[in-house]
Image 1 (cartoon, rainbow, N blue to C red):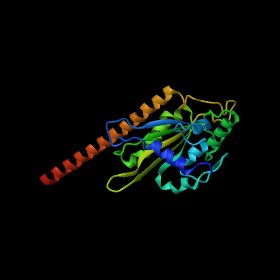
Image 2 (cartoon, one colour):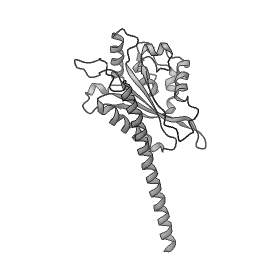
Image 3 (cartoon, rainbow, N blue to C red):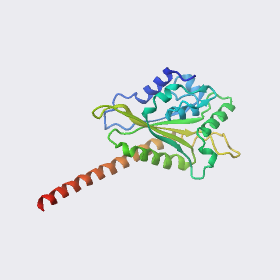
Length: 245
């Protein structure tokens, strides 16, 4: 087992590092971290070593192996945090691409073959979901964002939503989404395994994705508020009509 409890604790510190999380005026957290051996060794707040382990981590799945071995049981013991998740692919994706973890295992193999410890196999995206947004809207929000902003560009993406609600409206694990984005060409053609930084690796792309996430959240929040307002107006109108009659 190469993923230690210290590794898991470090990932949690990355996610919940802000002290102003209750300040609704601040921008939503959005971070993109590289998945590579070098970043893991340098201790620069990275993701785990491989694309496979990152995909398994967000899916809370301990039944997967990569070249370092099996995933820790701690992944599965935290499965209660998983609210939704899956793999999104372009409409033209071949059937084999739907096989669990195959894209990520092939990305790791292509990265290992370079012999370069700085080579990136995938990108780990973490997105904060506002606490005020209804849980019923989370999956649609994440799927729309991933589908339109990442997969529509040709990338493969594993996504998951984590949250654990406490008592009286508090959160033990605040709602957030993870997305593993391919950094390597994944289709079985002449360019298979080649680096593709345009999906999530370039600074301009990462800036665009951060803005797009906040825009998608704003749209869903605005729709929710409009629906709530219309619902309240309907109830008030119904109450007035009932009292008149």
